[in-house]
Amino acid sequence: MKEHLIQQAYEIARERYASVGVDTEKVLQQMQDFHLSLHCWQADDVTGFECQGGDLTGGIQATGNYPGKARNIDELRQDILKATSYIPGTHRLNLHEIYGDFQGKVVDRDEVEPEHFQSWIEWGKEHQMKLDFNSTSFSHPKSGNLSLSHPDEGIRQFWIEHTKRCRRVAEEMGKAQDDPCIMNLWVHDGSKDITVNRKLYRELLKDSLDQIFETKYENMKDCIESKVFGIGLESYTVGSNDFYTAYAASRNKMITLDTGHFHPTESVADKVSSMLLYVPELMLHVSRPVRWDSDHVTIMDDPTLELFSEIVRADALDRVHYGLDYFDASINRIGAYVIGSRAAQKCMCRALLEPIALLREYELSGKGFQCLALLEECKALPWNAVYDMFCMKNNVPVGETFIAEIEKYEAEVTSKR
Ligand code: RNT
Ligand code: ZN
Image 1 (cartoon, rainbow, N blue to C red):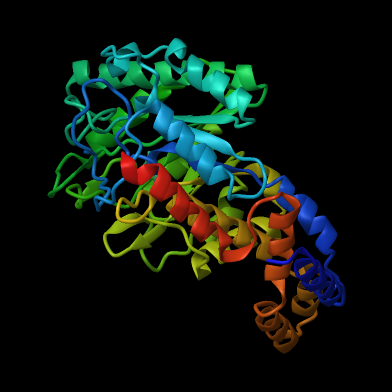
Image 2: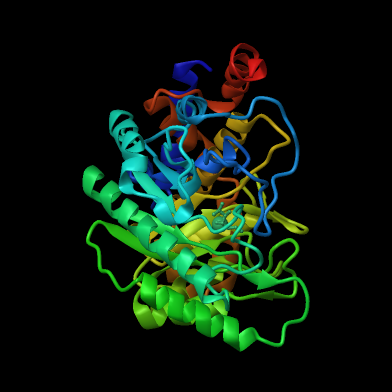
């Protein structure tokens, strides 16, 4: 697109927004500080690089067999860099334990060491991508339906050891990048059918978490992620929303809100202002639930717009971390990263452009009509001109022009895998 047209559109948008009291220049700066944590697992359908790879288990599934998935660390790194070249701004990379650089050796989950992530740490430095981390409870012979809540003490201790070691890895990442590494803890534990031991498993999970979190670290932060149900684990989830909310509030831990992990009519946006009164910070897994699947590619939909607006309205930009979490194996995987990341950015851009001062003034003085009318008008204000400007300033393609570029990469690289 022609630069001067983008510039002109932006100038018009700047005036339009100024008339409702919004400073688009400030928004452009805020967008520069909005970092996404890209989930490494979209590039290879959550396979990872363990040298004894099994099937994906743990109630999650990547459906589709689109050609070109990353088969090794080099391909994954190449794909991530390709994707980030179409996403304005600087971003983080969210790694799972199974993506370690194991150098052809079988390293069981209870043997993982920081050294297995040394090459990632260096790679991250080289490409200005800070790292976040996740322990991995799924896709392992010892996973079954239960891990940290397993009544067999040997199996439970295996997963406790794994998770403790992951925290150490995260600490090393945080130290090396001089910025805390956020480590997410999600376990799939649950049951397909009726269980008469709901309380037992939750007691075990609580005890496991307490053991895991005994060591205090300075360069990593823990967050815990609930879920409504997993595939094949439909009747009961040990780590439910109530369980983790209460746990996090009592232990001062961060909560991860995965937008695909709630009942379909529940508003994740509405949780922000409640949770932030009781937990220090939030991690997001921005995703899109469709029917049974919680992991479709993020798009600019109403729930995501609402969620980001609530973060801005709660004045919580510096208390929220923004991870993405979806895995679609049915379309070009690099394209999936770009769509989801740009969608999240557009939602944030719109949220930042809200004339909140005027809206609040209306609402607090009982001017309900005026408030609703302005909210409706905001939907059609030229926010896209501000996002286009953000792309242009960051030297990434404006608008749909990235489609052809990803097609080219597919023809030259991924289709040949
Ligand atoms: C699963 C959780 C979890 C995973 C990743 C791979 O339902 O959302 O965050 O998607 O850990
Ligand atoms: Zn998630």
